[in-house]
Image 1 (cartoon, rainbow, N blue to C red):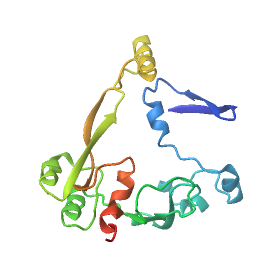
Image 2 (spheres, rainbow, N blue to C red):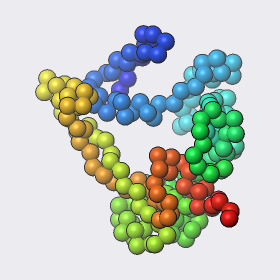
Image 3 (cartoon, helix red, strand yellow):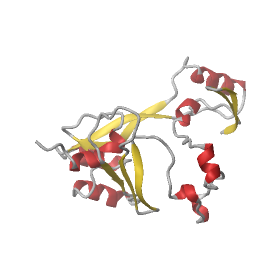
Length: 205
């Protein structure tokens, strides 16, 4: 998708893509950044492919200044995040720890949710949405999914991609279930990351 990225000024970069990319701005939110000095000091400048089975320092160590820090990581088993007490931002929630557990099988994932073994799953299998909605303790969250369904060739495709990129035409999408929350908790911007711990660690009266 991205051919190159060049620095133009201290706070400006130029991105060249291989072809039309109407969802580029949305896709950029999934790109992780870390300190060049940190990567060079720990010999992990080049990314490692997970499928290769090889690791470097960045495979099990995190670099950043976010609201959470990595407290434990077992590939394919679980990821444990704990609140970063030295975070520079304003904390609005009460989450102290969040545990992410990969469950590949859809039936097992849904069963774990309904049995109370986990507090949130994402994504929700379409065939199980009604069953989850019927549980009064759970809430299904639905959000838009950006899709760029465009022909790959021709000037018409390029013009359409440009109009979508400039906001003159909406990117085609459809809502789909994204996850679940306890019903008494309104969804927030950080809900996907925090609700698993939020239900277990309610404020004490």
